[in-house]
Amino acid sequence: DPITGAENISRFRQRLLEILPESGGAVVKFSIRQFSFLNEIFGNEKTTRLLCQITETAGHHFHSGEFFCHHTEDIFYFFLAETDEQTIRSRLDTFLQELGHKTDISQTNYQLAFYCGVALSQGGGDPEQTADILMTHVQFALNKAEGSHSNFIWFFDSELHKQEELENYIESHMHQALAKEEFKLFLQPKKNLKTGELESAEALVRWKPDDGRLLFPNQFIPLFEQNGFCVELDLYMVEQACRLIRSWIDSKIVPIPISVNQSKLLFFEPDYVQTLEGILERHQVSPKFIILEILEGLALENVEELNEKISQLQEAGFRISLDDFGSGYSSMNTLSRLKINELKLDRGFLLSAAGPEHEKSRLIMGQIIQLSHQLDISTVSEGVETAEDEEFIRSIGCDVGQGYFYHRPISAKEFHEIYMAEPGKRSMNVSAASANPKSD
Image 1 (cartoon, rainbow, N blue to C red):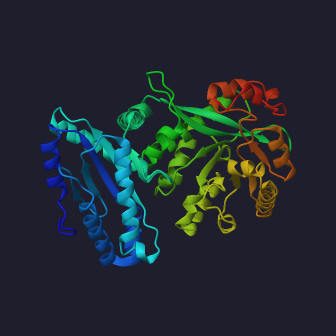
Image 2 (cartoon, one colour):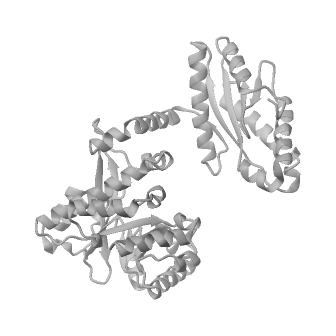
Image 3 (cartoon, rainbow, N blue to C red):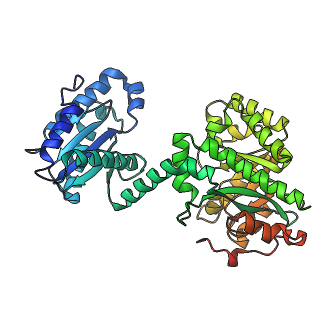
């Protein structure tokens, strides 16, 4: 390797093929947290020196028959002649602690952090196949380590194997599932806190494959956001919502608005507004029945560009809702600059309002709602789970409540039967909580 003088990935794999038939061991994939950020702060010379110091330190921690390589940027691979997890973890902890103290960058009071993914092999079998599996598994384990806030050393195990299999299934079946309409529209009602009536509903997606399983959004949405499939799925969900609204209109039922989540990738598609208008035109549905939910992270990059797209959508008749406000980047500055119609307060507000610092949390929540109203923005509180929650958000002037206190997300068919089939059923003054536990 021309940067560190260590062996490169080709030599590492060659040595791995040589040793695997004879003995078991652990392949470790190692990375440095926010390495590109380190480059910006300290410059290329110091980060190159860091890679060389990692190489020097690693050389003192390896036993006979063990080896390592530098691959690209901050990526290293290690082979340890160990199969006991505790022993491996202990050795890696010692190595990482030394790196955290002796490198030039660590002497600047910058807190270096490292990630390790680990995959184990007991040896034997076809070395080529075993090596391929180990390299795949160790990448999966490193991904888990990099996504963790506390566990920087992650071992590939049966649970990760199940997750890997699920992700492989998702990526290989997603287009087919869309064509077969395996993605199902579920709805969660939202209650108007002033009238006690059903105000609207949020569209939520569930995946029902042919094998009878039910996959939830947290199992496939993050992957779709990575591979771009969320663009197709979001438009499909708008289509499903319009189809349902059209069925209500055809049945002489006064429809309610349905809010549909829209991803960052879709929101900035060049023909996005025209595509949405085409879907509504196809089903002869007014845009006043579709609320487009966006996440606050969209505003971090370019508020002006975002507002321009929001204005185009509002001119076309859509309402725009800012979802999960308070879950991450939230600021009053963002709220004042965005041309949104609705603000959805993250359920974390209600959790805090019930906690030890509840007085401060309640005051902050009340001020946000008052400010929103002064900006002509309606408010929705998510995570309403008790009568006390509802009474509190009503007392501070919140417009709409949403949560398990009213109903869990249910299929479009169930929603229709419970709330839409008969006009008199739209009152939500009686809680459905006892019939709809959170575990559903």
